[in-house]
Image (cartoon, rainbow, N blue to C red; front, side, top):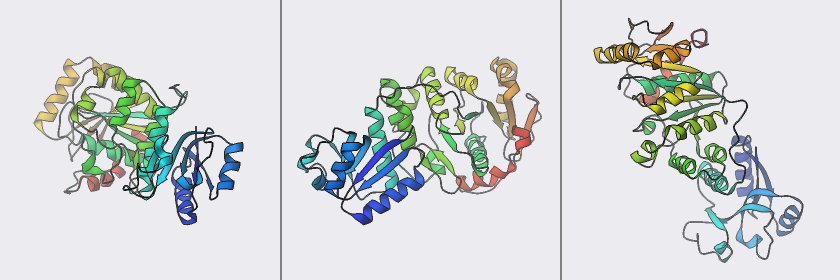
Length: 342
């Protein structure tokens, strides 16, 4: 579903800039309309209903806004925010800020008041889980390399990091609303979580991969139940074509839930004795492997050539020497072959 967003401002330049950016970058989620006068605003509100509206205070004096689910006043700057009489009953957003942040704010607020519920999608993304029993093998690099590969094929790709301690800032520079707001909605079971997810995820322009900013604190991720993780996975899979999940190294109920939902599982190892031993223990002592064997690919990272044939398919990634993690995963993305991954 696309939400109808109305922009009401007498600032023609701002209206053109904002509406063009939204139409170009958020067309799958937002249908935007613009008006620049009181008369135009009254006419639109008398004939149309809008999920959200960004409104200059001078245009909405003595105006019935019942046709708008989420009306928000455009405050010129932070100093004026909260000082507008008309804003006593409705919220405000800062006018001059990064558009991606403004839209994320609007969609996050609308998600909280939406009555759409949480129906599961009949069609959803291909879900790829990336996991290893050992830390330090380059699991996140592999996950992002695979995500970048899919993005290069023209797919919409969403990367979901479920590590206990997030490494997101090492790979992506743009910040925004934390994924913790999604966790909060999972707990309250209120609002349109899909709309929230579409609003707060960021997109890396270089690789074309969408992602979430890191949790606000460690407990936010750890407090999630296996059922929360399952719902998060399902909802994320409903807003993209490819969902790549970067998982923590433990093999608990949360991990098993993701394995159950995944269409593919990338098992990552490297050349170290520790990684090989932990992989051997997982293969020989854990019943989980049997349930994922048919959809698993062993990925030997950092130039390794694993001798363990625990699954039928294997892929060896070359060693890329660089101090920049983002450069490494982008360089490795070309190493994935569709004939191997299916």
